[in-house]
Length: 382
Image 1 (cartoon, one colour):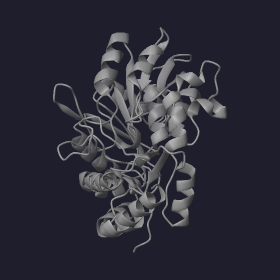
Image 2 (spheres, rainbow, N blue to C red):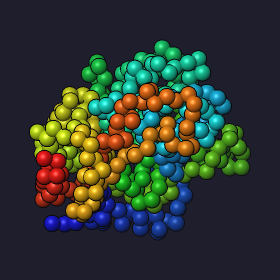
Image 3 (cartoon, rainbow, N blue to C red):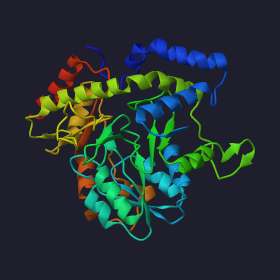
């Protein structure tokens, strides 16, 4: 059996080696390393794929979030609501901009923002909501948009883990994750479903005026060289990374389906184990063949018998990589501790940090590997 990887980027590269190598060689031949033709070509390709008017490439997903908030003109002290159970990048940009982060609990089944918890924390100072489409599943955007409209709030989608996913609205229409709110952001970190071979990110919007502002911010606030119209930063997607992404984008849907197939295998294998809660989807409660609401950036179990940490160790002993996302809630992190937060406000997050475990998930998993992983787990959790 081939060695199991948490994310097997080397095997994926071998499948697309010639296309990727050609893209990189094109950059080397042109020496257009910054804002070269491939950046513009990838931008256009991604706009077409997402059916969004504007894609603004940038240096990484964290920058994308920060620049989105800068572009919306949020001011010091404005409250921005986001989730307690996610990677710190989402909240750190709020703090960096001297905005006020407001953390709320998540839904136990989807790991996405809890709508009732969201409603409870809105105040006159609230200016934006940042739903995180965690592990590859889109948050409840019908409810979020309704709340945002009622309270005149911006919606900034953190789509770092769900690029390629569809959201099906209550009326049956569909839209790509990251293109639903006022602005969306993503990361092209190598392990993402659409990942480059370094750092990269992008911002999405259908708002022409906002897009213009964002394009200035990413380039030192310049629209004309040496004329700085807005306060900006230096955040650009380099041409080599754009070449890699341009080569991989046509395969994104195939990659997402491969991940769903692996998730189906896992779910079937664990279906009758009372010690395991498997992932479910918003749209239909299962990983069906008719929707693309979950693209499984991570496949995350909940272990209900108190043996999560023992399982983590057991898997490593059997050379099965795994990860615990996330072992410490944001409201408990030293950087973000605040007297406003009470433990009773985060019952789901406080449970998840003790029960979740993520298994290998990538496009190259084969049946032999999946069988070994699931057999190892079920034998341990009998």
